[in-house]
Length: 408
Image (cartoon, rainbow, N blue to C red; front, side, top):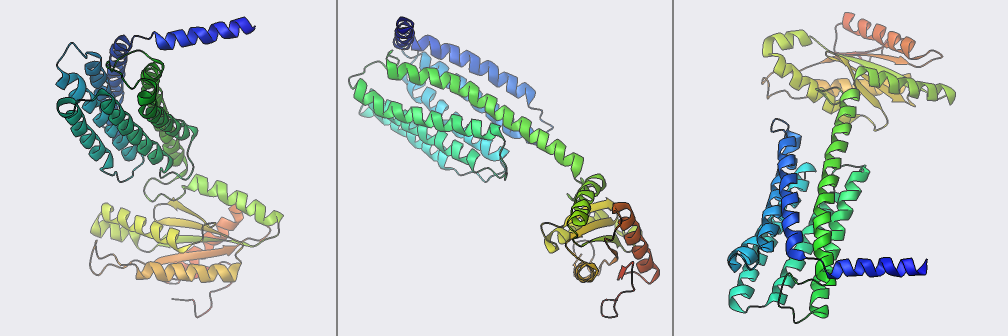
């Protein structure tokens, strides 16, 4: 067994020290170019969510072209293999950062572009001014490490409260890449300070190029997984949320309400249901158009979301009707909440639609008893019907008429 371990160790060391870097770079370029073309074909121009994927594909294309030029060192002028090749690699890394920022809906910084541009200028200086191969290696390594670190941290600071495993996988890939590039910046001058061939085969060089080849493929795989997880989350949201207002749809609201009601009955806690109906909404649609009606519904939904507690369950029942379940709230508290909502909606300004336009709402209130959701909803619906018969723009409870101070 000891012999096998030593044999495997020696075998791996031999591979890392006899690795032909120019050939590896050409293969990396071909693989990256094919991957880029595949991503461009997969990213549909009609889908806004695929913009970042197309940006990533262009960056992968840049990586392929850059590594191809670097691998042709000695066969093409230095301006192409050193300055242009490395510059394309750096700016494509910057483009990877912008792809991630766009995917996460974050405002990008221009720092990666500045780092790439400054590094290219330094490459020119240490190629045609004070020529120094080791200085160019350190510059490229430090710039690469910084760009990958910025991108990895951007993934970790994504807007999602809960990040799927694909986010951590991609972020870890960028951070590991940053660490390896930093190790090259430190290790290259220490292990081979007199290096004359940038494509020379040694442990640090080979480990760097092998990890760079595998790293880009794994990072692309991780970014694709991020898109997949985003698509799954969007599908789940479409299944549970109303497309116009973003509130829970009727099916999801009823599911959550039934769970909350079961909990309230089990723990002998209060709960109340509000059923809201915008007054004369059909006339508003007929007068101002359905686009204006949609804007009003979105405004009301936003107002409800901002006015209620986090634990309150808010949903769109259909059309211009909304539902609100108030946990741990009895009839008196529910009437107070309902009146607050009624007054807030009546005070909402709709000047964007029409200067004098104001909307009102009728609200039916019912408190949970020994019945279930179906009976609770029926009593709230009856209270809403009474509010409409009484002249609208008011709050009515199923059990008793509203206090005079709460009536419109």
